[in-house]
Length: 392
Image 1 (cartoon, helix red, strand yellow):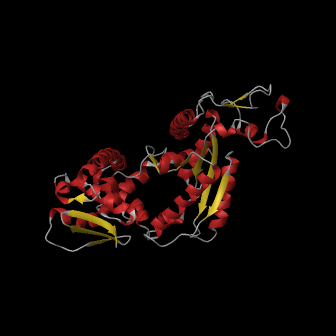
Image 2 (cartoon, rainbow, N blue to C red):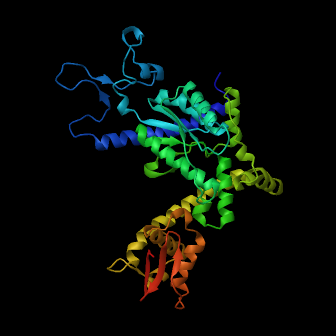
């Protein structure tokens, strides 16, 4: 008898992502391998020593055997290296885990699938320090991850600032910690437990801000520098992850902040979405998730168009020519303006649609108005038919 349908669903989602990562890893290894070296990953003693190379571990090698070293007859070798000789050729994937149902389900699926595919699997939990006893909870989550067989496992405390509000500040601190952990361990990617429900909430928050199609596209399945963040559960609902934890007897922690009406996302989750489903019927979450994917496809196409068009609207000195910008479709023109503002030093997270609309009016509604002040002490002004965006 196979696993419970919820468990099968989370494992399949993780397996697909790991297959993608392995394909990318092998491609990169082949591209960067020395010309005289075989593309297939093997390791062992240098040539000419008479020793036979040791092949990379097969999917049947257990994570325990890989971590302690195995001698003849299967006995553990005291003092052996923590990983076999081929370990450097195996990508390391970390799971970001808060201890909640979504991330615990993700951690369990990674722990199950990674050894079968020859992938090293670790975990990280971040203590934001926003609740009493958060440090003890983080250590408990780290212990659960180790019990699943993940290694390495980090518990990292961060200091949450104030920029952008409490939710944005906590997110910034968390991602900085994840980036640092990935660098510290030489990892390939971090898996995040965002579900289809999280995606629907993100789309509605973007809609409320009026931030345009990119905001409506929600969270990408692959994001971050070099595609380091992967979200396997964007096509799965929150209930599936919780059910998977329940049937596997995995302890989960429900963050009280997720039910605190002081937070916008919490109000949307417990009041907004249920009201929409009551008014419009079931299927709102699925429809919003589809909207995110369609919006992302459109936004990606427009971004590509804007990148190609940007060179054609700059003069020999690299300044933006207002007449040529005016001739572009507004969606393309505004993307060029946004990119220019960010390159000049405006923080992307603080640059909103209203800022770009004001800059756009220097092109489409020119009446001799003065400079536009943007976040990051960036100034945009029209001079002699050119748009100048620079640090003020």
